[in-house]
Image 1 (spheres, one colour):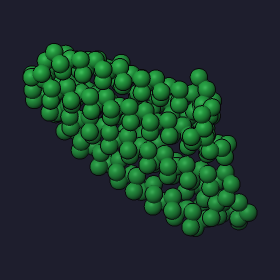
Image 2 (tube, one colour):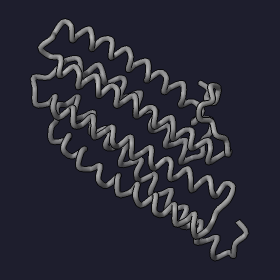
Image 3 (cartoon, one colour):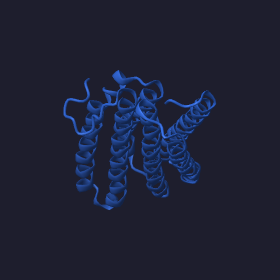
Image 4 (tube, one colour):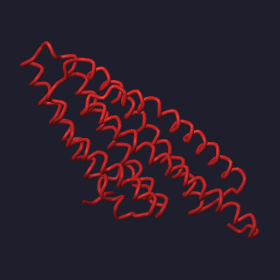
Length: 228
């Protein structure tokens, strides 16, 4: 941007602050995801309540990122890579908020399950959670480090999580037929698996935003945009 030096310094500081808020959102979202799965696997109703309450801080940060991003666009009118950095930060923030929403949904259903007799089948979601949170963390790292190579690995890994969800759904549906009294609890587990699958989708979106910010390439909907 062809602006006076002091204006450029102000812009750089504003952009750094914007990115810092996004990365803080990512850290809080990571914590909420972990806590949500602790609710489920440890049957910890108190942790469920903590997870649900903590979403307010993430929501507040998303609003701040949106407001600050719009202010940067209006005040400095960035172009090229600077513009992409601002737009990508706002899009990543939106995906992080949606991931946090999924964590709350997991916690709400896990709290209901914790009040009942429990299902051994819940442990089957553990491996899917590990894959999902690893994908999420890699998406954040790809964004933070402008690591395009890492970002391009996310789509095929998201498809693997989709397949895990389908496999779990088949298994749980089979268990329902053998244990009809537990149908309601099995449905909670089916929904939780679906929420994890959605987390993977949003993590993939963050990877797409990372590529756009770094290389000005829109890889959404491209079949060969990602490689293993």
